[in-house]
Image (cartoon, each protein chain N blue to C red):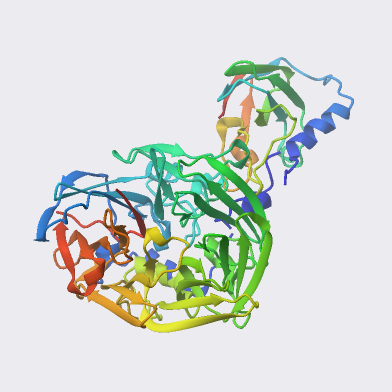
Length: 143
Length: 491
């Protein structure tokens, strides 16, 4: 019983959408670093720019990073300064899904920005929200 | 992205939302009023503030029998209260793993808490915030998986080089069997990470381990080699979402008893999602160990229970097992909250009964009048016919803890008992076979009591063949460790 999760839906939506750079993009950036327990598969992440988008899985950016080391990173450039939040997981076996155990619990590491942890559910926007201003760094633990 | 709140709840077998029953509300009110534990059994649920270094116990009676060498490992909750908030149910305290060593005629005791994410989080916040069986939890809790709520507080299992501290809604927690240092959660296979593992595995005579993990009308059936290697794991469907704390097994079958205390909603605390469905009977599912798809169902009258004895199959195919049966599960829902606050429970204690599942599909429950909990039996006869059931006894409405140990003889209907007296709280005792002997009563019984008058934990050894004579050896600690739930002997 594998649950295809909303992150993948978000990534899939992005893959089929026509993405054009925001004409009003400014020079702010966020470098997202991941500390991994294993160097296999890939890290998948999505970046949100508002609470509404966070709650409905409409990201402004996404990335798939090969997990070829125990520390990997990606930098999103050209962001407007403001509030953002990240959802991510380590697709250890590279099957494109966040795998779950037979009772539906995630078995691959996941993280929200600020390394926020929810209470029997996803971290809320208020817990995961961070400010991007100039060059910002988020270090997330995925293990 | 992350599974929805619902799927988290579905996945966390022991976690569920918040419909507070009147009894739970009353218990919560009592806690919030910060009433002191004033009953004489307050020691039973006292808080232990730190690990207990290994120390020699003082011999107070008799002498250790020659040939009795090994360790009694026990587990039970021992930290319930913190300044910022307290657990609201006996079952939700932090697991303290105790090691009573017996060697060269001497006895020792050490105890360490399982170093769980729950305990770390609550120590950091100085508040008990994690929801559980009877505690609703606090919004400040950070719970990313069921193992973040794992109290590792119910029983122990010796596996390979590890001692596993078991809860029932999450993974086993591996400990060092000598130092009791926490090694970490056990993942038996990557795709089964965080799957629940009940606190009552059944161990065959050759050491093979069977267990269940529950999730409503689903159960995972675990089969492990004696060294803990996973041999098989598969999910089976159950006919109803009963509360299952324990199951049993014959040499050839798994016996899953589905009481009429049924999960009707996913809520916190977990126990408040269950409803007593009077008149719907207790259903029993029997699975063939060799082919879990081969199943039979039986129906018994309504009864509630936590604990079953080992099952066996007779020549005509009749399956029998003993059970400590109650009229309902009010104790589970509310009584164990009252215990934590020193409030008399007022309910009827469990009594020993024997179930028979017949080849023609009929089933009967033979009830005895004997008060009994924590049933144990000869491990040399696991899954085989036997005559005796060891149990604790002496609980009554005003005193929810045992004062006696009993040995029921199914062939005569007699119960040999030894009563330690009203000053003693008797915990589960285990059957330790005498080396080189094979008779069913060729065994010692080993277990602790809490001496309320001396405010100290004691360790006792009885001869199973002469149980009514009382201990052949007793030792006393300088301190009282709160009551544990379940233990094992490792020779």
